[in-house]
Image (spheres, rainbow, N blue to C red):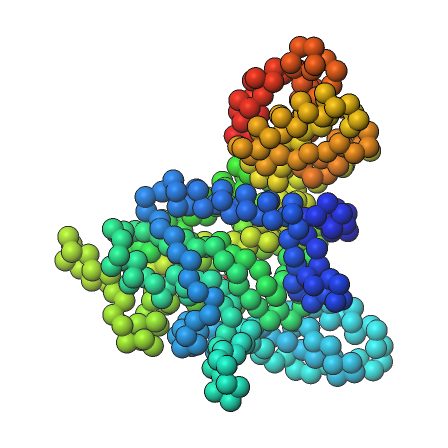
Length: 430
Ligand code: GAP
């Protein structure tokens, strides 16, 4: 993990949040490369979930919601973690983190003393309004789900969706995590990618779609190149399921800190829509005109953390190859698809030819430019950034209009005609 954290800072993937002020625990800022990587992941997810499907539509709901929505969804009452407090130094720990509690207890030796577990609500409060005494207390969303659920009726009324159908959303969520840590794994501000998939309220139908989404999500991460042996399913025990879930299965990743939750597939039944109907007084039933039926559908949810996906993609791609550190990211995810170098920075003919190639290629993809130091150092930097291909303009280029294209993973080079370059690279990164 130390190597990943250090590479992320060094190359501009992820920095500690508000670092120059000493940071803010549980927050992270994505740098130039991290932002590109994150956008690539979110775009791929959106393409697969919305663009290529006719049964899922997207929303982008407000982060701030009427606080009643959080009462209805059960978060005000039940979105809690059990917490114990060290009576000696008042540090707090999640009661289920036995190893951390044991480790901390040893610091105080004979004086070790703990409070009984208490429930601690994870919703982050905010205050809205310009007159202090009249400010409205609300919550930053603890999961992005509610924004989709409260728009169920709007979507049914304003689009042509028919059950079964899904609502997709990507956005920020906030949690007062007691013990943020393991880099971005447990943050207080993070991003989620979710689909709420509404099906007929029948156990058999729900089970069918639950299995479908389990496989669909596993296939997504395998197709991105995560090693099969590092992924597994784990079903939640009865006592660990969230308050809304009838059934929950996580996809876990074999992280350097142990098998850890990557994303979840949940059967939320009719919990959310029924509660929102009850608390809002608005009829949220679905009318199937053909079958002449009316029902509140069940929701099969897939919920993935963007930040956890990025972290595990980085961990999985990190490779030490002799002296070289290589991020073997899927080219579709790589922040830069190619880097272009003139062999020598002080030879005008090389620089202007390389500059032309750079300008042409960047019309279609993110392209890096480097003319500092020697070529070896430039390759080294691009390997760490996960750039799949490096193009070098050398003296032969001036004679025969070819350049070298070097492959990140094998370090092999081939000569390609400049006029074929665009096509050659586009084929390789698709
Ligand atoms: N809507 C369902 C839901 O929010 P969850 O299991 O609490 O379920 C879903 O969260 C996913 O969101 C997790 O699998 C994880 O990827 C991500 N996630 C949850 N809490 C997180 C945190 N504190 N920091 C980073 N990611 C988090």
